[in-house]
Length: 168
Image (cartoon, rainbow, N blue to C red; front, side, top):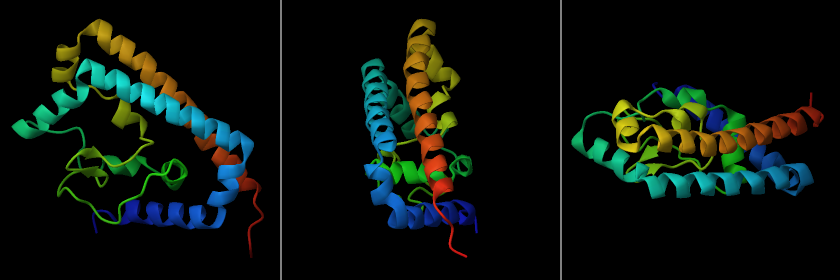
């Protein structure tokens, strides 16, 4: 099955969230990082919108000239990044909506809140040309802030999960 690996990661994330989500959400470090991550994601979204990135990407998909949301890119997601999505209030899909695309892409774009490095950092040549060097550089700085705090949150979650006694 094409999506077997990501479905396994989703199950792990949902199991961890059911067992430890409440405790993680109340942890002061996790709470602070989650709030900061949410703000950074919003800042990135605002910057992208003001620069016309969503419109340019939508036009690309509608032209059928390709998509960076290709099938297989979801393999970059592990259960901890998916758990971060759950902590941010994002529902994880049970099945792919778009055939031959990323498991997480839907008719209105990405269904995830916390996204993988490639998904945020990739700019196709057409988009780079539309944006221009200066706006790409400004957007990369904003994206870097989001990726940095996202990484900090992932590490804090990994550390908290590692500290939980395992049943034998």
